[in-house]
Image (cartoon, rainbow, N blue to C red; front, side, top):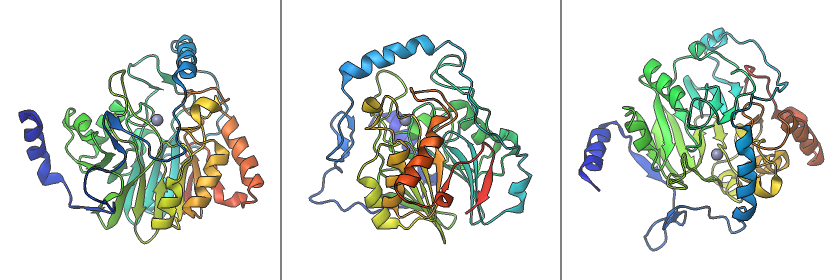
Length: 346
Ligand SMILES: [Zn+2]
């Protein structure tokens, strides 16, 4: 560790909460998802999409970068934020993509907050936003907790994070391993950095970093150098935020350990071409299976209808979810597909 890192650790130390670990390590050493050259997915069935097929698909996307955002018909509901003042014990509002405002036992929680017009390393280009955020940023309630699942641009948005830190200096950011530095470089110190199966107690909620099957990176030289995760939040009720993930055995592990969940937020979009996306992005059928594995009572569909990133039509995920719910003979009432800005109690 160099002097700068030591100094950073010392500066950050007073703000860190005591953490607990649920990882049962046999024989010491690092957990299996800590690889030699970065973090790795540990499900025995995980198979990375072949580079020879991924590279031409990505190359084909370059043509789209500077073209106008496609139009998408994603229903929108007017929300002026006044409903947050009612301080409902349990509510959830969908802003778009993986961003939601959750009210839980007196705390206001934000998931993967992104208010920007596009998701990418530059102000122009990147994946264009095809639908307006469901709530103006200025109408948010005072934010206590921000859950970050990984560092891809459609989940970790610099301008939104800086706005949150400016407007809500007491907000605490919960991030998976190796993302703290990104925040500290921007002068943000209210950060809890956790490994899979580590948790902290914050404002009477147990916040636990749980696994996901995905990858990370914001540039060409940092692939998998930071961790990706889902989040489990335990209070009187139980909440699960799935982040970004392919379908895998971790849903069953988390469901067994912490379920049944009162509410789960699960991604249903960015699944085509299937062969390339399957390892890292669930489709609606996968999300229903994850919902069953988690022993969840309700699900909010996220990661759709907002950024054009993959090949399926923007409106398709919600239709496919309806089909998947019917195919699994589940109750449609338990699978929530919101309008942008819509709030429900849970
Ligand atoms: Zn991602």
